[in-house]
Length: 447
Image (cartoon, rainbow, N blue to C red; front, top):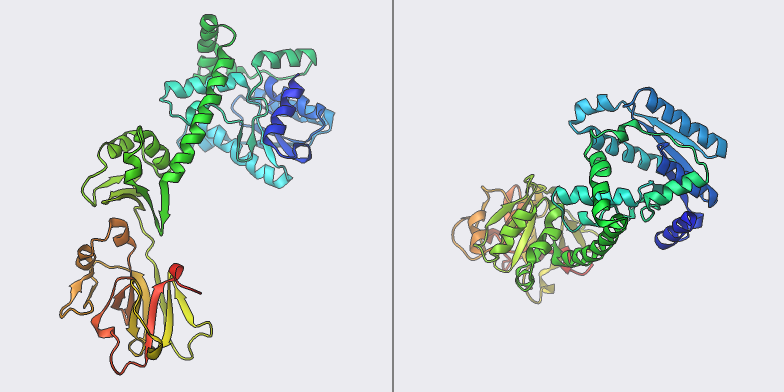
């Protein structure tokens, strides 16, 4: 029965599962030893990984020797990693259980690649899933967390996640499978042990034997709901250059936009309370900003969109010199712009967003493209005096993101033009101009 459950799981989640290589994480406990027996019985390609965290003295060493001996007897390769967990904890400033989890999964992934395995298999089962759901619920659950333990995540699979603990016990007894007892699981020192030994038995007493399967069913339903919500949230985000935009109208027309916003922004460090505040008033003054928890992203309000912008921009700078002969391909690419030299007679019309300079004013000089500096000034075409670039961008009513990523083209370190916006009057095309330098965004131009 359990073997059929494993095959059904693999057939559902792993295309060509019978040709895949599996790295089984075996602690020596009943669950993982049952998994080892099942995979071996099914004739699948397996390798075993065992972690010794050296937290239980001779007991930890005994677990290691036990797993190695069992693998030797059935002819399965076994890899062991010893960790000085307590020493690691001094520098990591994390709880023992969380640190151990990070250490083992990091090693599992390294070993998976080294051994040519396609998947890492853990022995999580239905009761583990119930414990996880209860733990997350009492710590403040969100739709994603209420899915419980995911059957598959990246290269990690949980082929026993749908199997009950009672069925595992019966399987182990039926096949007389040896295993080791972890004494730390018998204490009430950890929250999960308290859930396992106190909460779950109490729930079974009240709701009967189906309490754990029912929670598994709930997690499956949440997974379906979350899949839909996640897709909607992804559709809400529109990458634009170096930032991301969110359509305010779309949010206005969505009931429960806090949930949609949270799902869209949580990976950028925004919490539920922040998303609730953002969604409460979507027509704040342009420039209003919300910072995420670690101040790595800002969310700016504009008239029509929200702009999600990295708090620390990359200061782009590229220096170059134009010299004849001009490149054979007809243009030079600098950053996101292309520079093309043409004869003045070839210039038939002027396109919006494209800038035209007198080539002789820039040839054989020190040229550069960089981000705007607060002290930059230039003389906009058609104006008689100089203007600060920050004031110029304000006059154009640029959004916060556009201001942050605006670039300028400089000649001998002086601003010759604000890319995509305006040239300095000194570089305009004159009657005696022979060649014109055309600047346009590369994405919108023809190569």
